[in-house]
Image (cartoon, rainbow, N blue to C red; front, top):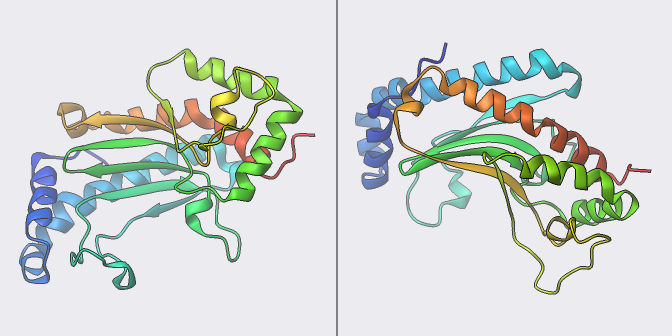
Length: 225
């Protein structure tokens, strides 16, 4: 059961950033397992269990990142990550890159944390389909835009096209012009992170975002008839 992160969690992340080598990591592997990996795993499992209890029909899976970087992608000479994340998402289709899957996530790093819903890098065809869906029924997205505007937890982020694409309504313009997007909240390192109640923050946030997930899962396949 997740009981909160600790100052030892934060200390380990800073230390692995400053001592990113095998000798240091092997000497502090027990700290990694106890202070970083274990609470992150417990948090991810608890949040996932609570989400699928209410949304089992969506077929979500749960993933937890590894601290070891893919050897093929080490460009900075550092073999370990100084942050970890977990995700709740639909399974990838055969041959589909996970970066193109609409995902709920939580990420913890030495400076802070973030969570939300979005694509790491949406495929061009995905966003083409989203725009086609907006063209068909702009009011459906407008209702979600109003919902997002009613709260302060999440904000829309994502790169936009330099040459603006023309949306069917003024309200949908910002979304329509995105190459990819995330609905994201950034948090600081504080006592909330060290509390068992932190899991509630994530569960409640994901539940708020579920109508956005449902909309875009349909929209990305251009099924908004």
